Structures are given as structure tokens and as C-alpha cells.
Image 1 (cartoon, helix red, strand yellow):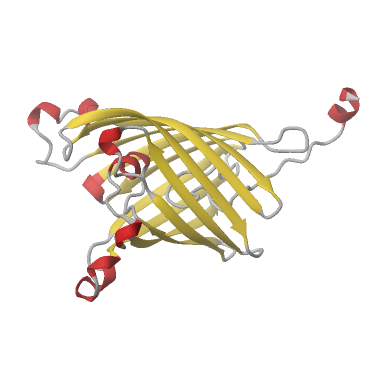
Image 2 (spheres, rainbow, N blue to C red; image 1 turned 180 degrees about the vertical axis):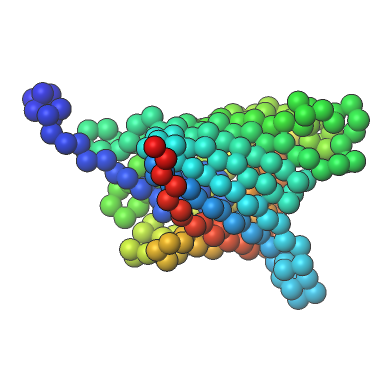
Length: 261
């Protein structure tokens, strides 16, 4: 029986989600081999500030990033955020892909980030190694019909955080889901949890709508977090859904084919 299965072509589930970001955080999706993704990510300010701040328009935060599929199962990416002038980079490897034999997609992500804002950090914590944050996550994802699910255990080392005046290490856990409403539209939800009591008020819950226009993926987002890279998502989330302190934003993702030989 095993030899008969092995001799047949195994059909993989290619795209559990529409984008490489579920909402704010990484999804189990990868850019295809030879594909370059340009990400323009924008988050407005707290909408609860009302008309005076034009519901957050006056306090925007941005990130621009690039992701490239070096092979079918390996992606590398980097980006730059306006928040603390932070640079981030990551590597993403798909270990297994869901098919009729194996029930899950398994993806490993390692990420690092470093702020470059001048004249802000205390002199004794201003070295590159002091400010460097690192994290690792395993994404376990599965698609069932029109629904996709993701579980993401991980570990985070924050580097020095000026607002806490120290650094932290903590285990993390992410939950995500996606419902396909049509061929071009999906509804997403994402929750990120850390297990550090000091950072207990920084647990982002985010909703998103994916609009696939063909060459672009447009993601509309509402979240209690204004941040767009892993360390800040898990340590700098300031909003609360119960109080209406929320941030509206979007991800604009453009695909380019950059084959190499």
C-alpha cells in the first residue's frame, strides 16, 4: 500500500492564507520561488482620539519591507519601520506542507530587529548587541474547506526596552484563523499572547480583510496594536478593545517576478 502511495503524485495545499502576513504577524505562507514581494504597511493613530486628530490620521506609523522566495521553501525578508527607526530581518523555512498524507503545514521563522533612533537610549545600553531583539516561531497551519487555522508557539528575547528600562525573555503563542468569503476576499483574525506578567497588557488582537486584486493584495486592518514587526507587536501594544483604543491600517503587497539562474 505504501509503495502505491509513494508512486503517485502528492498534491500539496499551496496557499492556506492569501498573504505572508495573516494580519500583523507572519503567516505560514511563503513567497513563491523567484517572487519578490514589496510590502507597504501603514497604521493610523488611535481612532478614539476623535475628530481633532481625524480619527488617527495625524499619528501614522509606517513600514516598508521586501520578501524574496529563494527556493520553494525558503524566504528571506527585511524592512524598516518609522517606529524607533527600526530595521528588521527574518528567515522563513517551510519544513512540511499539507497534503493528503500529511495533515499540516509547518513553517519555522527566525526574526531579528534593532532600533536606530539616535540620542534616546541610555549610553550603557546603546550598543548594537544591547538593542538587538530576536525571536523564533513555529507556525502549524491547516486548511479545512474555506477555513484556514494557524497555531504559532515561539520565544522572544527583547533586547533593552527604554519604556521598561530592562530587557525580557518570554515564551509566546499566536492563534489565527481565516475564512474565505469569495475567491478574492477573506476575513482574518489574529491573537498574540506572551507569558511574561510584566508585559501582560501588550497582547494584540487584530481583525483583517484581504482583498485580492490580482497583482496586489490589499489588507484592511483594525487592531489594538500600531506595530508591524514581531518584537514591537509583543511589547509595544498600547490599545484596548474594551476602551475603543484601536488602530486602523492597511498592508499593500505587490508581487514581482525576479527569476535567477
